[in-house]
Length: 145
Image 1 (tube, rainbow, N blue to C red):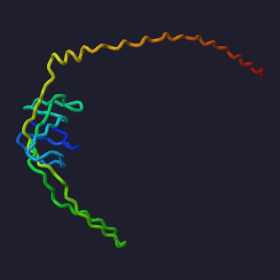
Image 2: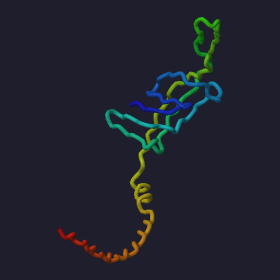
Image 3: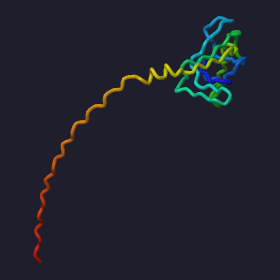
Image 4: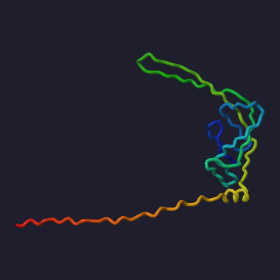
């Protein structure tokens, strides 16, 4: 069973007991986080796709630690101009472990309630008045030869 979840603006394919690195979350280490933006769930070949998300489905994860990613060197240069800039960057990350993928299906009772919404009355169409076009025949004078 796997799910595709949106976490911190990025989409991840997650499975139970999987560890992933995401952008830093403002949560204490050791606490659990629920993500409601579940886009797709595959449960043994049975695929459930949301539009855009699956209502009632959640993914629970545990924050293992907060850390920094590897250093990335950004080097810019323009040839023959004497322009060189060197910058470094380390991304702040959170390490998550997926604890549970919860797929709640909509029950028939709630589905029937949502289907019994009052329908809007269709607007009555105004009768289109048909105007008869009067055509006048133009007479053309024949030139005598």
